[in-house]
Every structure is written in C-alpha cells, then in structure tokens.
Length: 140
Image (cartoon, rainbow, N blue to C red; front, side, top):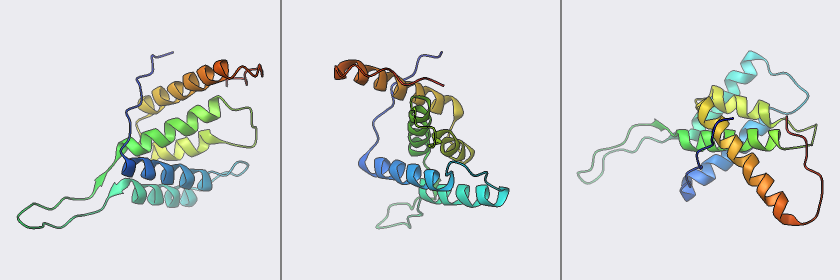
C-alpha cells in the first residue's frame, strides 16, 4: 500500500466543480448496467465540459485565458468515489465505475488511488472515534 499524500484543500469553486463531477459520474455509472462506448463518450464529454475552465477574453490590458482542464476537481471526485466504494458495504452502489469514468476523462490513476486510500483512512479513524461499536465494513 502506498502512503497516501494528503489531499490538498480545494477552493470553493473547485469544491463545487468536484461535487458536480461526482454527481454526473454517478448518474452515468448507475449500478447494474454496462455502458456502451457511445454512452461512455457522452459521459466523458459531459465530465470534461464541467472540469474545463471557460475561455476568458482579454480585459483592460490583461491577457485572456484559454480553456484549461482542471485536474484537481477530477482527482478529488474520483478519489472520493473510489474510497467510498472501497470502504462501503452497500452492494448496489458502484463508486468504482463512476471513478473509472473520471479517470478516463483525465484524472491521474495514481493520484486517485492515493486519495482513495486517504478517504479509507479517514473513515477508519472516524469509525474508531464514534464509540458505537459497529463492525468495520469489509474492504474490497
């Protein structure tokens, strides 16, 4: 197991983008159905549309900005989904398939895996502090 690097904090805007990416990936990767190549292409195009900063024209002597793919929100969303899936005991939810869509859209698999491990560690710590005594869900 690699040592997970701590997930950097996202700005408010990037956090909203990561939440939108999470919901969109989950919607496209509903459990119990295989996606066709056309459906995968549609999902990736929608994810890229969300994760790409819009073009900003030049203003008052400042140069404009080109469209740019934002990887941090993609990786945060994919790591959260994968970590939740690894640590979940809910069989009908497939966060792995949603994370795979985000990886295919451009998230780095190594960074996603590190973030997923971080999510699992946090959930383990939180469950240990709860004092409820519920058994740990099985890790996959």
